[in-house]
Length: 516
Image (cartoon, rainbow, N blue to C red; front, side, top):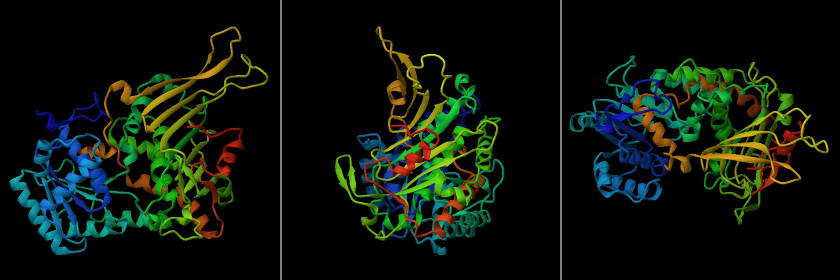
C-alpha cells in the first residue's frame, strides 16, 4: 500500500488497524471567503505534500462570484504561498495539486446550481476515479447552513446513511452552531431531517491542535498523572485562551456574538471536557464523546443570583499592546459607541461528580490581552504545613501546565532547594516542547481535521448532544445579560490581563490567576 493510501490516527496507534483513505471529492461552500485562503487551502496543500490525501481526490469551490478554474487556481496558489506553514512552494507538487482544483459558480439557494454540481461531480467520478464519495464543507455564514443542506438533499447529493456504506457523503459545519440554545436546537432539528448524526462533522479547530490531541494520550497512558487526577490532590484548574488582537473588521459580527458565544461556549468548554472526562471504554469516537457529554451534563448551573459574582465580563479600552497603541472596543469599526458587548469573560465553574467535587474550574478568555496564548493549568493542593514552613509562608503549589499554543508543550513546576548554606526553596520548571524534542513542526489543526473527515473519524469533532449541553449551560448567562442590558461590562485597558474584577474572582478563595 502506498503512503498516500494510509494514514494513522495517533490517538488510535497501536490499538486499532489503520484505515485506508478512500477516494473522494471535497466541495467547499463559500470558497471565496477568508477561511479557505488562510486555512483550508494551505491545509489541503500540506496534506498533499505529506502524502495524506487520497490518490484520487478533487476539490470543488462553490460560490457565486464570477470565476473560472484557472482564476480560482491562481488565487489559491497565492493563498498557499502566503499562508502555508511549509515554505517555499513546491512548484511541481502544486502543479499536480492544482489540476485537482475546480470552481463552480452558483448561489446557495439556486436549485439549478446544485443540479449542475451533481452532474459535474459525476463526471469527476469517471475522470478522476473519486468513487462517488463526497465531503461538503460549509465555510459560510451560519444562516446558510440549512439552505445548503436542504438543496444538497433535494439534488440527491447527500446519500441516505447506512453503516459502512459505499459511496458515502459527509458534511463539515463550521462554528458557531447556533446563537443560543433555542437556535441550536432548531438547527439540529433542521439538519437531521436530511443527515444522520454520523454524517455531521461539527468542526472546532481547537480540537485539531497537536497538544489537545495529546491530552487523551497524556492522561490515560501515564499512571503517575491519572492516579492523582481528582479532588483529593487537585486544588483547582485554570484554562486561559488569550488573544492580543482586537476585533479588527468584525465589528458587526462581534456586536451580535460577543466572547461568551465565540470562545467560551465551544473552545474553552471543549478543553474542559477533555481535562475532566472519565477514561472511555475504548478509543472509538462515540466512546470518547460519551464521556465528554457526561462532564457537560454534570456542570453545575449558575443561578441568576450567582451570575454577577461568578461570571465576569469585560470590555477593552484604549491602551498599548506589544508597544503599539490600541483603540478601545467602542472605537472599533461598526461598533456602537455605547455597546455593552463583552470582549473578555472569566468564570468559575463546578462539576458535580465524584472526581471533581469541590474543585473549581476557572476559565478566562479575552481580546487585546498582552499575548496570544492557550494554556491549561492543573494546580495541585498545598503540602501539609509541617516541614519547610518559614514565617508562616506556604511554598508554591505544584502546577502542571499544558500549552496548546504557541510553543506546544507540557511543563511541571515543583519546589527545589537552591544550592548553598542558606538553603532557600524556590520553584523550578521541567519543560517539554514538542518542536524541540521531536524536531518537527506540528501540523495545523485544519490538516488534522480535514484528514479525519476523509477517514470518517469523528473523534475530534463535536457531537450534537455535546453542543446542546454546552448551550444549556451558557444560555442562562446570556439571558441574564439580555434582561439587564444597561449593566455595562467592567473595563480593562488594552494590553492588560482583563478587569480587576477577574482577579477578585479568584482572590475570594485565596487564589490568583497564573502569570503566563
